Image (cartoon, rainbow, N blue to C red):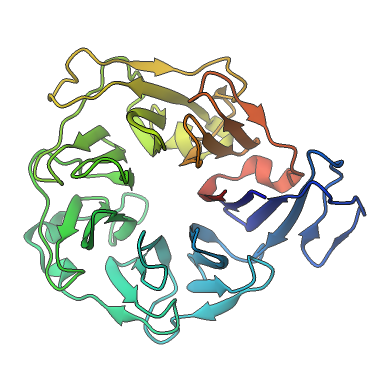
Length: 361
């Protein structure tokens, strides 16, 4: 029974596929009940609509525990699959939680990134939190700045290495991709070949030492655990990159959402974004002949009026999910064809940008 958590700017949509769901037509206390029929039924609820959401994290081994970061009210946790939430981390974590991650091997270990840039860790499922100090002592920190709020910056993404629980990639928006190899005891500053405006990163359980980055200054990937990065961009006509996802069964198949710049990526009034696919490894700086393909006219809305998608891998080969301002979509053939999921989509979401997507098989 798949469960999808889509974090929009003002509300978390939880969609549960249930073959025996019944239509009741009710919409009360923030709950949106959709009218699907047996065989393809989705029950949807909307939560946290009163907050400004930024990120979400769920671990498949603890599907009832959902973490949501907000810009106006800190970190929230659910222990019942998103039915109810409580604020956690008060007194330690500030109001602006921009990124979240759960350790792939240990669902009790949770990471949170904030504005101003700081990283926090919990080892008890979010009950208590500790500040992993030293991040802003790095030499490059004097150059970090987020253009809309130039006097500050934040941790946009935290990506744990599935092959080494103490190794994390941390994207600072904007200014650096930094790393730790000892769970935040010490920090390593950006390397010359890394992107400086990393929006999202991903890793793969079957690809040791590899990681992929979607950044405002382009796409990048590493084959040596972040020591060096290459930038295969042939065929990538829109290089303000936002979300990156890798095929569950094939780390050489990569999907990427991008636009020409921040206005066309994030603002529905001026939106124009696209989704690209790359097949084949790219160990050389230029990609070694591997080219990106734009996935237009495949059932996933792109182009004018569509904000940049947030992408997530599924569980099977070729399975991906995408959320935009126009709804939730899935593919089982690595993007050759997409289907809009039959979940009720609130009209308010059509003018909002998605902030996060978590899919549980």
